[in-house]
Image: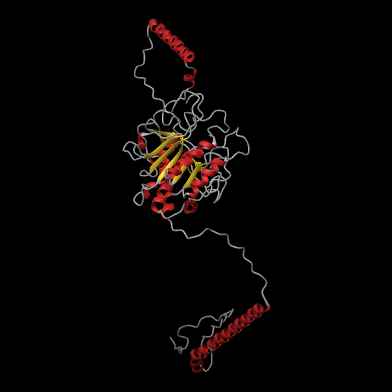
Length: 454
């Protein structure tokens, strides 16, 4: 980007360098002198340009082309909007992008109408529909068509786009925070989108100034049943205290923050609230001169929410803009900090659940705290009667069990006792009889016969 560009953190421009004509290291001195003369001539020519037209040196260096091919981006793997395509394509929706303009081969045939409402440039204008590339990146996230070269595509590739350019070749200089715009061009872009029949408006530029015109334009869009989605912006270290992004801070507008590939919030924001988060840090996006490349910003996250709303409104056309917002919040994937957190809002947008989940009518309410109260005399008497009846029942059961045991003993053991004359049926234990300490010598075998003479 040029030195006066403030959008460098958003679209990362790629440089195409050709080294096929490299010069050998042992070139003769004449070529060195010729190269030196060439550099001097170039410097003099540049000085002449400055003297003739000083504004030419300040012209914005626009974003170039991206990569010719790409794998499936991580954001698409997380959200998997393709699961909804058999049910809805978003073809009946008109999604407006209010930002830096739109221009990309991936969006050919997708743009239903466009307008340039950007303030006149004080420097040499580039003449490109989108010099900064931010509007193109957001529009591509919403509705870029599928190709065989790119794994990247929009959330709702069949939807129609409206583009309102409210930022020229560069963001206004001297503004704080950087990359912010005045509120009146945003108001003009929103009003134009409503006039063009937009059902969804994505505000892909942030103003840190409130104004009656912007407030009225936002209210007009909401009253026209349009879902308004706005980037929550990013907080920088040197930003003035107490500022808020608009129109994200207005009631009824979906304020969107961004997460990275790790699922964590990628940037702080000045927004008084964040309703939802979506992929926005180092996501793959369309580039104005063709191809795709990395881009970062809460504006990209707002684009993912806008594409989801296009699918949802196409699948459930009977829903009002308030009911659409309710479904988005109710079906969001839970945030690490819980529902309604300062950084994640209600959680990560969930396209499939937003369209197909069954929700009850009405709005969630908080139950009143439980109050056991003090029991009345009647309740105490009833409780005492229940306890008395329980004690009586337990006593009767114990008596019955005891009687059953006695009757069983009489029936089973009575006849046996009579047969033994009630003597014990157990054999007597053997008596231990100790031997004599001095036994008699054993008798001879034939001592009992009479003796005869020899």
